Length: 112
Length: 112
Picture 1 (cartoon, rainbow over the protein chains, first blue to last red):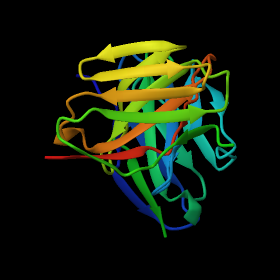
Picture 2 (picture 1 turned 90 degrees about the vertical axis):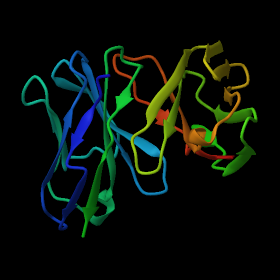
Picture 3 (picture 1 turned 60 degrees about the vertical axis):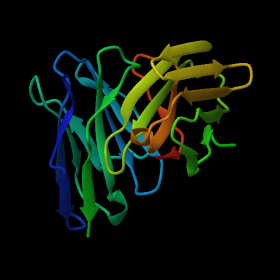
């Protein structure tokens, strides 16, 4: 069964460093999303991406964040200058039909 | 009032019991209602979705939406220890891409 994959599974970085989180969505999907989940809290929407552009972003998704689909298979989230409060689990999701989102296993980001 | 509210539990039931999980919401524009299952430190796994009001059944799972009361439910029949997980409700309005608003999740423990 096709699935969303994410790398790395765990990333440790120092405050102020740039990180890139990578996702390989399900191959025939057209809609891509990033969500995050701070430990013990609910899953929160960050950004949606369709037709090579951002469709919607939350207030969390400020100028420090960017997304890219550099080729036909990868979807990346970049955080330019990480802060302690960026520590969270980051989930990539993809969908063929926009409402039927399938989530990856997540990347745990730890900012020290 | 929070946009989506969900009792965090934990909810403990004996094996074979019928489980009822619920969410309430405040935004009457929500049209898609999703249920995800999340095991500890894993990504959310899509269980079921419902459009607008009504019931939907899939095996041991039944999802119900009552838009007049702004209340959704997930029923699990003949619950198994393997059903022990956190159950997340998520909702979306209809747009070009769908931003899910999640509940906090209900932790379920099915005792053998």
